Image (cartoon, rainbow, N blue to C red):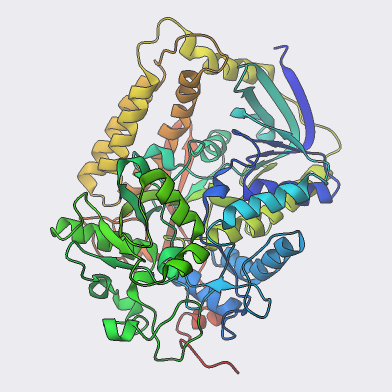
Length: 605
């Protein structure tokens, strides 16, 4: 029990965009702030976000406004979004982009010096402020440079094992240093979860190694609710070949700059997959598509190409082409930017993509097609939060970014994620600082809870263990790909829950060799607990949503249900067992409902 102890008013778990923005806000309100990150500062998964951040700045098209951004986000989310979150998000998005610029972010510019914006799937107008195809990296750089002047303490290469509790309230976190393996207690009046996603529960993913569902699992074990966990986004354009770049994301910006999808014979196939909801909004022939130009405001007759449909639609279209025998040789489709833009344009607009694939795969995207297919990318569900403060159902616990659910509904539009980090990272930091400021003393910590956490963390070193953590991890990922992947069915989901029970039993029997210093096997063993928990939440929620909607596709229920459009799936811990229920979502007010049928492509006033 003689662990190192560190105290702050607010502890933030995660140092990506949401965590750093929360830290800046909380510190600015006078709170003592500590940021705990699993990797090194600057290595968060936010750095992998390429395309841009969505906001109705109107610099690319004067017809845009927050109402149109609201409309696109709700429609893209297939009506399941928390409309209060979407309204806050779309109204505050321009301020957050301009704030980043004020702090030093170097956005791409128009000829007359304004922030340049590009097209992205599901957005009616060119709406993504970007820095080439390295926007997330620039966001992290800017937030870090600004944050170092705020008096924020950063604790790197430190993994949180569990939250500390005081009578049902968050009281800090119990963690270990990844290099030494020694334990540390972070005592705090408020805790902000900003840990990102859970893509590592799938075999093929664009996510980095840190994305193991830590925040979702920490919140669940602490008693918070999870919402809409069945909605996992499979980005349509992850590389499937060559093996050196398998799963690596090809930014949607490639299609935003004119890239098109082709089958094995070179045919553009997305014209065959325009959903009824979007009929009349997208070009239906090659000739119509030629009237559209990237980043240029067009008249009402210049409809966007269907390659820029929402991610769920494009991912299912690629899968359908493969199943019909029209896919590329390695089970994907071809993405062609080479014939649609000049070499100079590609190198200017997509420098990261060009250099990345030249270095890692000897693939010249200015001359060759990319072979792409769906890859696990993002989870729309997450911890259920209050839209205003980002507080959870556990007092003193807050969440922001991908770890939180509600904003994106059943499907996230590209570019909304980076803006989400800024808008709700700020609100989470403010909410946590206000909560901490109202407490006169630091919450207490139960020594028995600390002993239990420590015992479970060290269990893999016991000689009685028989399971290999790498093998259990691999079996979990295979199960999720097969039973709870991009297309699901009742039988497979039920079978998956049975396999998860077995995997859970195996996970408590894992055995690792060596000591606690620099021991990746031990790290894997502890990550397993979180991955299995979030996998169960995804699979259980998917089993009980008998419809197809957004990122959730049921082969046995291919249509969307009008009744299930009215409910969100909520998961909670009941006496150690995972329980689910459908909760009726708050309906859209009349004035916002009218936006959904707003005319498209109006001429500016």
